[in-house]
Image 1 (tube, rainbow, N blue to C red):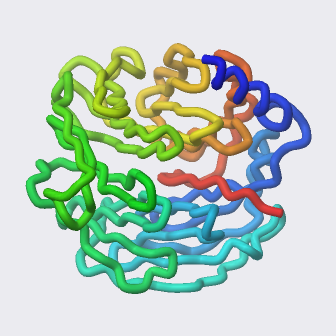
Image 2: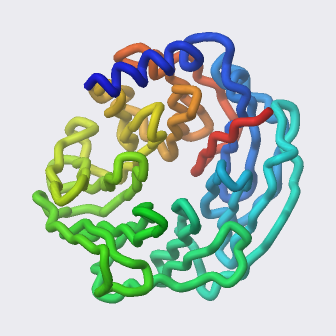
Image 3: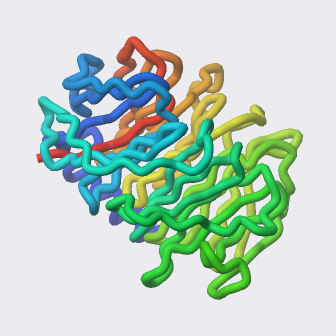
Length: 325
């Protein structure tokens, strides 16, 4: 508790509802384009993009801050772009590398580790591990993992372990050696009737956060050490849901409505709205996409306060927060 209070004091000193705002862009991607917006414009209810990229067939996007790169996933390839030239007024397309994929990655997604980038193509039953340069990818060994399946990368020491969630278990193991160490698997205390929907690794706290639904409710499954104890989230609306996580700024669940879980938990909100994508920014704002609208919430107050509801003019399916100079 004392740690969270300290983090709240730090955040309230320079972010959230306070000035000056953190210079940043929010990248919003659909199946056909990525638009880049000033974060401070979105917080003010303005939605004029500073740049737009044409990206037909886009499946997901992810920003790797330590590498200064934005990654775009398509059905047949993965692309890496430099973000060193980004500013609050422009997001130039500086393509650094393209890697072909060995299988159709429709419905695929990206997850970042400390040294590698994971591409999971659920429909093809394959997962690939890329270095930042996208050279010489390696295939993850998914032997014995029950489908449907969600994957992530859990940093441990110098390793990026393959984290997984199935309808009946959560755990982690070496990505190319299922029987190797370190590894751990725990049965879900409430097995899933739907999902799993999402899995996130929080390397700063050494934990996994999974999301799925029983027959009656959506549940959060945190795995920390060898303890896994799930709990109900998002009220009485079992169904597809996602997690938005920033290790410092907070954690939220979204789907039918949303619920802030950290740093201070709030009740479910906007329960009649279905959200397709969400982002907890380093600026302590929560950005939630529903159709063509972007709901912007300040996370410093509890419960969070909605500060803007701009219309983007297109329906984002993926969001990324990109600090700029």
